[in-house]
Image (tube, rainbow, N blue to C red):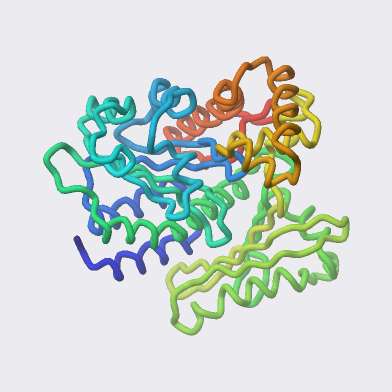
Length: 379
């Protein structure tokens, strides 16, 4: 195992750089291989934090994730599934721990063995605010040492940086190649605050921010603030940092601004990305596709996250009986008979198409997307 501190610092630096998601995963995989030796290439996933369902998978040795693997994840009764790991405090689990040292009864382990693996380490990649934007699978072939406590701690320490990097890469990709009216906006500024480039829709975002006057050449104060905070460390010769601000717009909605320094030779620039503060698309999708009420959508979201009836009742401050009644209505409207069927139906109807679209986009060098696939999205 290499120097964990140096490896962690490198992952932190990588996560602060605006880049493609595939480029980020490739560079992070190289660092991981020195810190936590493993078999073959990591399996990287992005998740919709609202549901913990896959939105993309990346492994250059497996360009297409087998549908059998997805069926095991969302219909199978097994251990070490990503949604379960994402709900744990540690966010890291190994197959051998989850099975008490005897994984032979696990269909997941049996599938891994067919691909040459034996051990499996699964990690939920959560930002510091607790949202799981990604997940990681590492494997070792038979006869290799078990993943040890130091290696698991390293993955835990690296997880927030990896999650932030994945989130930022998705934002950067969607801003440079927008797919709808709620796509993030991107603005690139020189160190004298002149605009060097912008995404097609960014003006709409800027005009909705307080004190903007683009005709007079005045950018919103919030934009200049995050730009200045992002650029300051670089000007002082320190590692780049990401500046963030949450701002109430003139129209009464909240947006989040991300400031990221860009360096090319001796020139210093900064990218500012503007996005909706609550970009979860699953809520409107559940309403339009299945006619679920607001409370039924909340229950469904928690079911997708793996919550039990007791946990749902506690979260929504209702009785377990009320939760069961909501579940009955949800099953009737969606045409399923169980929680597992509900998760499987929503994943394969709305998330597998997104995952397959992202596999296609990866093979063509295009930016990857987050969130479920809707009829407004294009390949």
